[in-house]
Length: 327
Image (cartoon, rainbow, N blue to C red):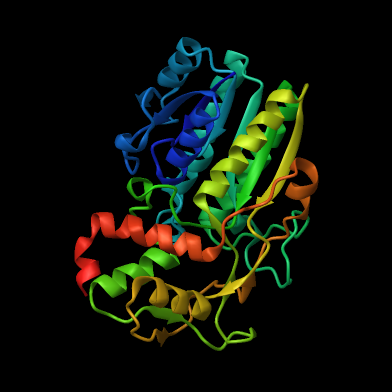
């Protein structure tokens, strides 16, 4: 097997590429490096600098590397940006997927793993989100991920491709400091950024119907997420013919934003109490994954806790922001 990983130089993608290569899988990465960092890739993993919108490049890499399976992670993924630029998000995330799948079918590739998101669920009013919870996304990003799932499954059924859709919950942490998330869009880097600038971390809303009034989320260590991709890829390798597996990838445990803020203060040694800001539109009170299906179907469970996520993320932050240690 040779796996093409699109977006493999990104934060999640580099962890997936590293996990698969370390397990002995043949891997090639396609990334336009608009946000990816080539230096994240393991030694010996080829990088093709191209977009999934470039059909000629796709045809070439699939043929030259005799690709037999695809892990598709390349996508725009910022919720707020998707509201401001819906056309760009549909072009990259849906049209780009169409171009990729067309190339996959033409090349005779028969295994396809799609990076989806818990954003497909919107704001469900349920204690645990199962894969059967109605998918009602509330922003263009979530819509593109749901449309992507539909497209992947339809192409799989029509062309005999074994497919899988992984619905990520909140990804955090890093396997090594140099692989850390460089963006400041998720809650843990947002806390770190405020601390580095000498400001109090912000909590958006403390009047939700939860025990401490703040939102509850399910966090998954990026190294566990990478391991889940490897497990699913091997399941697809063994599978004969078409068929889809759609699973949540989380820990099945909720952590409130206030609890997370306290943990960040403890790990970083910066004890400035968090301040409360107004709610953000569209934030669900609680979003925690049911992980029963992935456990039952694959025997897979996450092995790392939230403290390890925060500690490893802080190590990665300090590598790029050493001034934060002196505050």
